[in-house]
Length: 217
Ligand SMILES: Nc1nc2c(c(=O)[nH]1)N[C@H]1C(S)=C(S)[C@@H](COP(=O)(O)O)O[C@H]1N2
Ligand SMILES: [Mo]
Image (cartoon, rainbow, N blue to C red; front, top):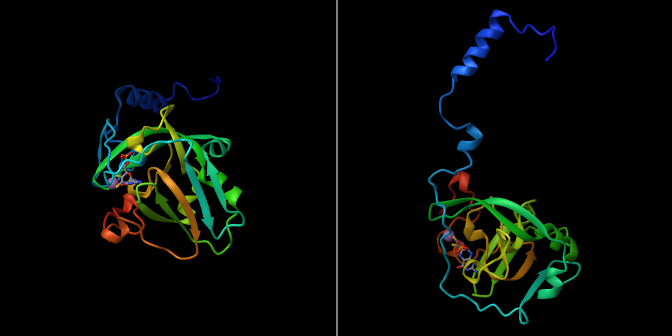
């Protein structure tokens, strides 16, 4: 510390005393920290399994991912081709509409931006329509599909994603309720028009922002 700072002024000494006493600390979390947990959610440490009850078997030789619709180049990737794409890692929180949230999930996989770049998305695209191997479907606006921390995840906490959680590959879009993150992803169709998916047709919100509690429509 520089000598000419008023280190021993009355105000400085008072402030130093307050700091030592923890004066003005409410014990509350900062606003940013409060908002990490969306309204109506509670934290869990475990990781619940939720799906339609049809767990497709993992056969990596038969695995395919189709990327089609309004793209310059349709992609039909096999497991090796998919894994040859650059990998990224992101740590994010899960918010399920059934009210549990789970913090700090470390995902590894291919970024949605990377995949979109390879296919080349036409200017008129507004939505990504997603279909999974169990027949599950869901829809997200293109901008949400392409956020920085959205990825086609093959690993969770450094381990291959288990079948019950969507292995060998699931989409993760952390800022929307988890039903917008399809497990066992099979097809991505880029479309100019929206098309509600499985839960969206059954009363769930079309967008699903946890912070605005967009659970049901
Ligand atoms: N293919 C597929 N993906 C799915 C579902 C599903 O039934 N099938 N359920 C969704 C719902 S409602 C939730 S909450 C999460 C649950 O993911 P988890 O089982 O890994 O926790 O997956 C989502 N993705
Ligand atoms: Mo869910």
